[in-house]
Image (cartoon, rainbow, N blue to C red):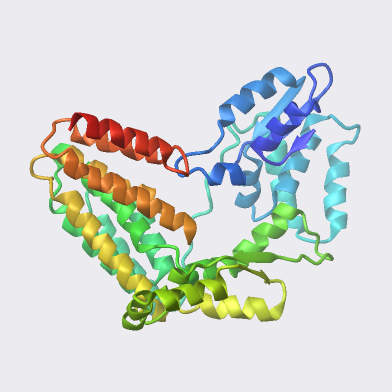
Length: 419
């Protein structure tokens, strides 16, 4: 039995397809998260270690490695590395040469497929210890002027305290991909303002935390971002790979959009969007027009072009109502988080981490924002308490446990009972 993802290994075991007296089980240890894992506000990822433990008991022979990583490292797809593992397992009565010949006869992507096949073969033989591989280094391409701007930003990151650098680099990549290099400058300026208030004595924890969550706040999910991601070639290639689409097959992709009136108003210029948001009748009309959701076939030209144009409005984004709201919210969050810094360093760190509660798009974003406000406002109730940081952390974790917020409500009542 071959499973192309770790939870597929678990499902195969649960369904009785794996038995300890006869089954060779080959699986990839990487994760493609299920919808049920993504909908949890916090960390809803299933425990892969439990699946591995069950597989060790259920299978007669077990071969597990990061087959996806091995394939990606060779610019190929997971089926090639899994085929290599199958060949190495000797579960089928064919020599390695027969597998290689089959790949050569396909006539497409032969060299990359053979490299991935070989990597999977070696992983199954135990040549690699864990199946993990170093990812292909990031190679930046583009006009020289933009590459020069990127190098300037990189030098600024290199000047940051060492514990902050790796997170700051990831954050910088995120905000530049979201907008442009000038936006990356704004990110580093905000980060520098926080680091100026931090110290090595505290191992730069405040700066490291800020590096992550300022980037997340600046790279918010608006309609422009969603449309941009949905029309990227890399995403379409990933879907084709996950669905196992062959070169001579057509793939139909239907995207579902369900923007609220707030998302539509947020696309308008800042002043106009604010006026529209202040008119309940207009907002209700926008909800009637757009609230039912839309299904767009992005494998066709009209829908794809529509989303491609929308995703290309990066230069306009900074003038929108949504951007004005997000930046005002970001500045307010930083101000409130750093306010207690002089008397309670740990509390400021925990307040910065509360930004984790805000994520997603449309209704998901609205629910997260409500939870964020609830936890941040609780800091006022906990003012001057020595355990304020601990309680903010507990409230945040409670908010991450369920989408409806019932656990958070219970935790907040506990706080109110002793304040």
